[in-house]
Length: 133
Figure 1 (cartoon, helix red, strand yellow):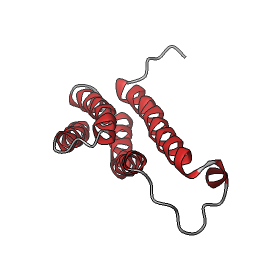
Figure 2 (spheres, rainbow, N blue to C red):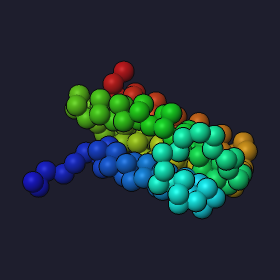
Figure 3 (cartoon, helix red, strand yellow):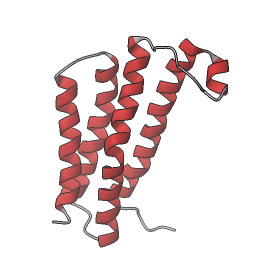
């Protein structure tokens, strides 16, 4: 197949890798504290508290999962409708870059700027959606 993918789908593919970065980072930090037996086990019962860094990785992953479905839906909607390009391209890039920047900001515990970057990622989703409205 020599047909180029719309950039929105390419960014969607990269976003799946970003999801795995989040999952791997959170899992690695939690396993380092709770041990391999915890990771391999059923994780029943009360879990020990995480350190601030591992807790931030856990919350950053949860935050990603809260808005990720909206990004996926927006991208797929513009591609299926054939309305990609322009604002949807810019919005997808904006979302991806903001979500990449968000991770170290959250892990470092930097307030306000982290929230601003989250808002930028939300604007990215809105830009993607603007192609449909």
